[in-house]
Image 1 (cartoon, helix red, strand yellow):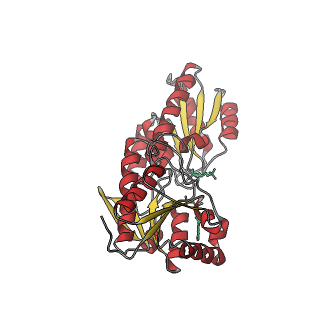
Image 2: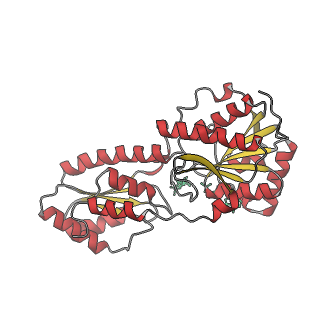
Image 3: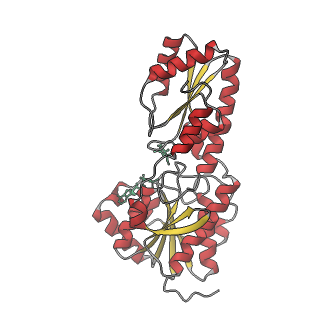
Length: 330
Ligand code: ADP
Ligand code: F6P
Protein backbone atom coordinates (compact mmCIF):
# COMPACT_ATOMS: atom_id res chain seq x y z
CA UNK A 1 0.00 0.00 0.00
CA UNK A 2 1.52 3.34 -1.03
CA UNK A 3 1.58 6.20 1.41
CA UNK A 4 0.40 9.71 0.78
CA UNK A 5 2.07 10.96 3.93
CA UNK A 6 5.12 13.19 3.89
CA UNK A 7 6.98 10.76 6.15
CA UNK A 8 9.26 8.68 3.94
CA UNK A 9 11.72 7.16 6.40
CA UNK A 10 11.03 6.11 9.97
CA UNK A 11 13.74 5.20 12.47
CA UNK A 12 13.17 2.97 15.49
CA UNK A 13 15.23 2.89 18.66
CA UNK A 14 15.04 1.35 22.10
CA UNK A 15 16.38 3.34 25.06
CA UNK A 16 16.79 3.01 28.82
CA UNK A 17 16.36 -0.38 30.49
CA UNK A 18 15.46 -3.19 28.08
CA UNK A 19 12.11 -4.90 28.52
CA UNK A 20 10.72 -8.20 27.18
CA UNK A 21 8.39 -7.34 24.32
CA UNK A 22 10.55 -4.55 22.89
CA UNK A 23 11.37 -6.83 19.96
CA UNK A 24 7.69 -7.35 19.27
CA UNK A 25 7.26 -3.57 19.13
CA UNK A 26 10.26 -3.15 16.81
CA UNK A 27 9.02 -5.94 14.56
CA UNK A 28 5.54 -4.45 14.36
CA UNK A 29 6.83 -0.94 13.66
CA UNK A 30 9.14 -2.22 10.90
CA UNK A 31 6.54 -4.40 9.23
CA UNK A 32 3.72 -1.88 9.52
CA UNK A 33 5.95 0.85 8.09
CA UNK A 34 7.11 -1.30 5.18
CA UNK A 35 3.54 -2.37 4.48
CA UNK A 36 2.58 1.31 4.29
CA UNK A 37 5.41 2.07 1.85
CA UNK A 38 7.76 3.75 4.32
CA UNK A 39 11.49 2.99 4.48
CA UNK A 40 12.46 1.68 7.91
CA UNK A 41 15.75 2.13 9.73
CA UNK A 42 16.97 0.76 13.05
CA UNK A 43 19.08 2.94 15.32
CA UNK A 44 21.41 0.88 17.49
CA UNK A 45 22.00 1.48 21.23
CA UNK A 46 19.33 4.11 21.80
CA UNK A 47 20.36 7.74 21.53
CA UNK A 48 24.01 6.64 21.49
CA UNK A 49 23.34 5.33 17.99
CA UNK A 50 22.19 8.77 16.90
CA UNK A 51 25.35 10.35 18.32
CA UNK A 52 27.59 7.76 16.62
CA UNK A 53 25.53 7.22 13.47
CA UNK A 54 24.93 3.53 14.12
CA UNK A 55 22.00 3.19 11.78
CA UNK A 56 20.89 0.19 9.74
CA UNK A 57 18.24 -0.43 7.10
CA UNK A 58 15.54 -2.78 8.27
CA UNK A 59 13.68 -5.25 6.12
CA UNK A 60 10.78 -7.49 7.09
CA UNK A 61 13.24 -10.39 7.28
CA UNK A 62 15.47 -8.54 9.73
CA UNK A 63 12.76 -8.86 12.36
CA UNK A 64 12.00 -12.54 11.68
CA UNK A 65 12.31 -14.83 14.70
CA UNK A 66 12.36 -11.93 17.13
CA UNK A 67 8.84 -11.76 18.59
CA UNK A 68 9.62 -14.57 21.05
CA UNK A 69 12.97 -13.14 22.15
CA UNK A 70 13.63 -11.07 25.26
CA UNK A 71 15.97 -8.07 25.28
CA UNK A 72 16.16 -5.78 22.28
CA UNK A 73 17.71 -6.66 18.91
CA UNK A 74 18.54 -2.96 18.48
CA UNK A 75 20.42 -2.91 21.81
CA UNK A 76 19.85 -0.11 24.29
CA UNK A 77 21.86 2.41 26.25
CA UNK A 78 21.69 5.27 28.66
CA UNK A 79 23.17 8.22 26.78
CA UNK A 80 24.30 11.15 28.92
CA UNK A 81 25.03 13.31 25.87
CA UNK A 82 21.37 13.25 24.89
CA UNK A 83 20.57 15.23 28.03
CA UNK A 84 22.59 18.20 26.72
CA UNK A 85 21.40 20.73 24.10
CA UNK A 86 24.52 19.93 22.01
CA UNK A 87 23.75 16.21 22.10
CA UNK A 88 20.12 16.81 21.16
CA UNK A 89 21.21 18.98 18.22
CA UNK A 90 23.63 16.30 17.11
CA UNK A 91 20.92 13.63 17.31
CA UNK A 92 18.53 15.76 15.23
CA UNK A 93 21.28 16.40 12.66
CA UNK A 94 21.92 12.66 12.34
CA UNK A 95 18.21 12.10 11.71
CA UNK A 96 18.30 14.71 8.94
CA UNK A 97 21.49 13.30 7.46
CA UNK A 98 19.92 9.84 7.17
CA UNK A 99 16.60 11.17 5.92
CA UNK A 100 14.83 10.00 9.10
CA UNK A 101 11.75 12.18 9.24
CA UNK A 102 9.91 10.09 11.82
CA UNK A 103 11.28 8.43 14.94
CA UNK A 104 9.75 5.75 17.15
CA UNK A 105 11.29 5.82 20.63
CA UNK A 106 10.60 2.73 22.73
CA UNK A 107 11.50 3.34 26.36
CA UNK A 108 10.42 5.03 29.57
CA UNK A 109 9.85 8.60 30.70
CA UNK A 110 13.53 9.51 30.30
CA UNK A 111 13.54 8.30 26.72
CA UNK A 112 10.35 10.26 26.07
CA UNK A 113 12.05 13.41 27.40
CA UNK A 114 14.70 12.86 24.71
CA UNK A 115 11.99 12.41 22.09
CA UNK A 116 10.34 15.62 23.27
CA UNK A 117 13.62 17.50 22.71
CA UNK A 118 13.99 16.05 19.22
CA UNK A 119 10.43 17.02 18.35
CA UNK A 120 11.23 20.59 19.39
CA UNK A 121 14.11 20.44 16.89
CA UNK A 122 11.77 19.45 14.07
CA UNK A 123 12.00 15.64 14.12
CA UNK A 124 8.62 13.89 14.20
CA UNK A 125 8.68 11.61 17.22
CA UNK A 126 6.36 9.10 18.86
CA UNK A 127 7.09 7.33 22.15
CA UNK A 128 6.10 3.75 22.95
CA UNK A 129 6.06 2.83 26.66
CA UNK A 130 8.70 0.19 27.32
CA UNK A 131 9.73 -0.49 30.89
CA UNK A 132 9.27 -3.36 33.31
CA UNK A 133 8.54 -0.82 36.05
CA UNK A 134 5.01 0.17 34.89
CA UNK A 135 5.86 3.69 36.04
CA UNK A 136 4.64 5.74 33.10
CA UNK A 137 1.71 7.87 34.20
CA UNK A 138 -0.29 8.12 30.98
CA UNK A 139 -0.63 4.37 30.44
CA UNK A 140 -2.01 1.40 32.36
CA UNK A 141 0.32 -0.91 30.43
CA UNK A 142 4.04 -0.78 29.71
CA UNK A 143 5.94 -3.28 27.60
CA UNK A 144 7.73 -5.87 29.74
CA UNK A 145 5.88 -5.50 33.03
CA UNK A 146 3.75 -8.59 32.50
CA UNK A 147 6.74 -10.78 31.66
CA UNK A 148 8.81 -9.35 34.52
CA UNK A 149 6.17 -9.94 37.18
CA UNK A 150 5.57 -13.47 35.92
CA UNK A 151 9.30 -14.18 36.01
CA UNK A 152 9.60 -12.74 39.50
CA UNK A 153 6.49 -14.56 40.69
CA UNK A 154 7.84 -17.93 39.55
CA UNK A 155 11.21 -17.25 41.19
CA UNK A 156 9.54 -16.21 44.46
CA UNK A 157 7.44 -19.41 44.46
CA UNK A 158 10.68 -21.38 44.29
CA UNK A 159 12.29 -19.42 47.12
CA UNK A 160 9.15 -19.98 49.15
CA UNK A 161 9.42 -23.78 48.77
CA UNK A 162 12.89 -23.88 50.29
CA UNK A 163 12.06 -21.17 52.82
CA UNK A 164 9.12 -23.19 54.14
CA UNK A 165 11.16 -26.40 54.23
CA UNK A 166 13.78 -24.75 56.42
CA UNK A 167 11.22 -22.69 58.38
CA UNK A 168 13.08 -19.55 57.42
CA UNK A 169 12.19 -15.99 56.77
CA UNK A 170 13.01 -14.76 53.23
CA UNK A 171 13.48 -11.25 51.98
CA UNK A 172 13.16 -11.21 48.22
CA UNK A 173 14.22 -8.05 46.45
CA UNK A 174 12.51 -7.26 43.17
CA UNK A 175 13.27 -4.50 40.67
CA UNK A 176 11.81 -1.01 40.83
CA UNK A 177 14.06 1.86 41.83
CA UNK A 178 11.36 4.46 42.21
CA UNK A 179 8.20 2.46 41.66
CA UNK A 180 6.76 -0.42 43.64
CA UNK A 181 4.48 -1.96 41.02
CA UNK A 182 6.51 -5.16 40.59
CA UNK A 183 6.72 -5.54 44.38
CA UNK A 184 3.01 -4.86 44.83
CA UNK A 185 1.97 -7.35 42.17
CA UNK A 186 4.34 -10.04 43.44
CA UNK A 187 3.24 -9.30 46.98
CA UNK A 188 -0.32 -10.16 46.03
CA UNK A 189 0.50 -12.97 43.57
CA UNK A 190 2.94 -14.71 45.93
CA UNK A 191 0.94 -14.19 49.09
CA UNK A 192 3.76 -12.34 50.82
CA UNK A 193 3.54 -11.63 54.53
CA UNK A 194 5.12 -8.20 54.13
CA UNK A 195 5.42 -5.95 51.06
CA UNK A 196 7.83 -3.04 51.14
CA UNK A 197 7.22 -0.38 48.49
CA UNK A 198 9.26 2.81 47.97
CA UNK A 199 5.99 4.76 47.87
CA UNK A 200 4.72 3.36 51.18
CA UNK A 201 7.46 2.00 53.40
CA UNK A 202 7.72 3.79 56.75
CA UNK A 203 11.09 2.18 57.67
CA UNK A 204 9.56 0.76 60.83
CA UNK A 205 11.53 -2.51 60.90
CA UNK A 206 10.26 -3.31 64.39
CA UNK A 207 6.75 -3.69 62.94
CA UNK A 208 8.04 -6.35 60.54
CA UNK A 209 9.92 -8.09 63.34
CA UNK A 210 6.80 -8.17 65.52
CA UNK A 211 4.83 -9.51 62.59
CA UNK A 212 7.33 -12.35 62.04
CA UNK A 213 7.37 -13.32 65.74
CA UNK A 214 3.59 -13.28 65.96
CA UNK A 215 3.19 -15.39 62.80
CA UNK A 216 5.73 -17.91 64.06
CA UNK A 217 3.86 -18.25 67.36
CA UNK A 218 0.75 -19.07 65.34
CA UNK A 219 2.63 -21.86 63.56
CA UNK A 220 3.51 -20.18 60.30
CA UNK A 221 6.48 -21.95 58.71
CA UNK A 222 7.78 -19.21 56.47
CA UNK A 223 7.67 -15.46 56.25
CA UNK A 224 8.06 -13.92 52.80
CA UNK A 225 8.97 -10.26 52.59
CA UNK A 226 8.93 -8.70 49.13
CA UNK A 227 11.24 -5.72 49.13
CA UNK A 228 11.45 -3.26 46.24
CA UNK A 229 14.88 -2.31 44.90
CA UNK A 230 14.16 1.34 45.74
CA UNK A 231 14.31 0.40 49.44
CA UNK A 232 17.10 -2.13 48.91
CA UNK A 233 19.54 -3.19 51.64
CA UNK A 234 17.90 -6.63 51.79
CA UNK A 235 21.05 -8.39 53.02
CA UNK A 236 21.59 -6.12 56.01
CA UNK A 237 17.85 -6.15 56.71
CA UNK A 238 18.00 -9.97 56.80
CA UNK A 239 20.88 -9.86 59.30
CA UNK A 240 19.00 -7.49 61.60
CA UNK A 241 15.78 -9.49 61.39
CA UNK A 242 17.61 -12.75 62.14
CA UNK A 243 19.32 -11.15 65.16
CA UNK A 244 16.04 -9.75 66.49
CA UNK A 245 13.84 -12.79 65.90
CA UNK A 246 16.26 -15.69 66.20
CA UNK A 247 14.73 -17.04 62.99
CA UNK A 248 17.10 -17.81 60.13
CA UNK A 249 16.58 -15.09 57.55
CA UNK A 250 17.96 -15.02 54.02
CA UNK A 251 17.96 -12.36 51.34
CA UNK A 252 17.54 -13.14 47.65
CA UNK A 253 18.05 -10.35 45.15
CA UNK A 254 16.37 -11.34 41.90
CA UNK A 255 18.13 -8.64 39.86
CA UNK A 256 18.34 -8.49 36.10
CA UNK A 257 16.85 -11.94 35.51
CA UNK A 258 13.53 -10.09 35.87
CA UNK A 259 14.27 -8.06 32.75
CA UNK A 260 15.13 -10.99 30.49
CA UNK A 261 13.32 -13.94 29.00
CA UNK A 262 10.75 -14.66 26.38
CA UNK A 263 7.84 -12.20 26.56
CA UNK A 264 4.42 -13.35 27.68
CA UNK A 265 1.54 -13.46 25.22
CA UNK A 266 0.23 -10.17 26.64
CA UNK A 267 3.57 -8.42 26.14
CA UNK A 268 3.89 -9.74 22.58
CA UNK A 269 0.38 -8.65 21.61
CA UNK A 270 0.25 -5.25 23.32
CA UNK A 271 3.77 -4.37 22.16
CA UNK A 272 2.90 -5.36 18.59
CA UNK A 273 -0.18 -3.14 18.55
CA UNK A 274 1.71 -0.24 20.12
CA UNK A 275 4.67 -0.50 17.72
CA UNK A 276 2.35 -0.46 14.72
CA UNK A 277 0.23 2.32 16.24
CA UNK A 278 3.31 4.53 16.63
CA UNK A 279 4.12 4.15 12.93
CA UNK A 280 0.51 4.84 11.97
CA UNK A 281 0.64 8.09 13.96
CA UNK A 282 3.80 9.22 12.16
CA UNK A 283 2.35 8.30 8.78
CA UNK A 284 -0.77 10.30 9.66
CA UNK A 285 1.51 13.30 10.11
CA UNK A 286 1.41 13.31 13.92
CA UNK A 287 4.41 14.07 16.10
CA UNK A 288 5.22 14.66 19.73
CA UNK A 289 2.90 11.84 20.84
CA UNK A 290 3.12 8.94 23.28
CA UNK A 291 1.21 5.71 22.68
CA UNK A 292 -0.70 4.49 25.73
CA UNK A 293 -3.24 1.94 26.91
CA UNK A 294 -6.13 3.43 28.80
CA UNK A 295 -9.55 2.03 29.75
CA UNK A 296 -9.19 -0.97 27.47
CA UNK A 297 -8.09 0.98 24.40
CA UNK A 298 -4.90 2.01 22.64
CA UNK A 299 -4.71 5.79 22.64
CA UNK A 300 -2.10 8.51 22.29
CA UNK A 301 -1.24 11.62 24.26
CA UNK A 302 0.69 14.77 23.63
CA UNK A 303 4.18 14.11 24.95
CA UNK A 304 4.20 17.25 27.19
CA UNK A 305 0.89 16.21 28.68
CA UNK A 306 2.11 12.63 29.13
CA UNK A 307 5.27 13.72 30.90
CA UNK A 308 3.41 16.11 33.19
CA UNK A 309 1.04 13.39 34.44
CA UNK A 310 1.72 11.86 37.86
CA UNK A 311 1.20 8.21 38.66
CA UNK A 312 0.19 7.18 42.14
CA UNK A 313 0.05 3.66 43.44
CA UNK A 314 -3.57 2.44 43.44
CA UNK A 315 -4.67 2.78 47.07
CA UNK A 316 -7.32 0.08 46.90
CA UNK A 317 -4.83 -2.48 45.53
CA UNK A 318 -2.46 -1.58 48.34
CA UNK A 319 -5.20 -1.90 50.94
CA UNK A 320 -6.18 -5.34 49.64
CA UNK A 321 -2.54 -6.45 49.38
CA UNK A 322 -2.17 -5.65 53.08
CA UNK A 323 -5.51 -7.22 53.97
CA UNK A 324 -4.47 -10.48 52.30
CA UNK A 325 -1.09 -10.62 54.03
CA UNK A 326 -1.72 -12.97 56.90
CA UNK A 327 -1.88 -11.19 60.23
CA UNK A 328 -0.85 -7.85 58.78
CA UNK A 329 -2.22 -4.84 60.64
CA UNK A 330 -3.79 -6.98 63.37
P1 ADP B 1 13.85 5.32 30.75
O1 ADP B 1 13.65 5.75 29.33
O2 ADP B 1 13.61 3.86 30.95
O3 ADP B 1 13.10 6.21 31.72
P2 ADP B 1 16.31 6.69 31.46
O4 ADP B 1 15.66 7.61 32.41
O5 ADP B 1 17.62 6.08 31.82
O6 ADP B 1 15.40 5.44 31.08
O7 ADP B 1 16.46 7.48 30.08
C1 ADP B 1 16.98 6.84 28.94
C2 ADP B 1 17.76 7.85 28.12
O8 ADP B 1 16.90 8.88 27.66
C3 ADP B 1 18.86 8.58 28.87
O9 ADP B 1 20.05 7.84 28.96
C4 ADP B 1 19.07 9.79 27.99
O10 ADP B 1 19.80 9.47 26.85
C5 ADP B 1 17.63 10.09 27.56
N1 ADP B 1 17.05 11.11 28.47
C6 ADP B 1 16.65 10.95 29.73
N2 ADP B 1 16.22 12.11 30.27
C7 ADP B 1 16.37 13.04 29.31
C8 ADP B 1 16.14 14.46 29.23
N3 ADP B 1 15.62 15.12 30.26
N4 ADP B 1 16.43 15.08 28.07
C9 ADP B 1 16.94 14.41 27.02
N5 ADP B 1 17.19 13.09 27.03
C10 ADP B 1 16.92 12.40 28.14
O1 F6P C 1 14.32 -0.57 33.53
C1 F6P C 1 13.90 -0.38 34.81
C2 F6P C 1 14.90 -0.94 35.76
O2 F6P C 1 14.99 -2.34 35.63
C3 F6P C 1 14.61 -0.56 37.19
O3 F6P C 1 13.65 -1.40 37.80
C4 F6P C 1 15.95 -0.65 37.81
O4 F6P C 1 16.04 0.20 38.91
C5 F6P C 1 16.87 -0.19 36.72
O5 F6P C 1 16.19 -0.43 35.51
C6 F6P C 1 18.18 -0.89 36.74
O6 F6P C 1 18.92 -0.51 35.65
P1 F6P C 1 20.37 -1.02 35.28
O7 F6P C 1 20.22 -1.71 33.98
O8 F6P C 1 21.16 0.23 35.14
O9 F6P C 1 20.84 -1.92 36.36
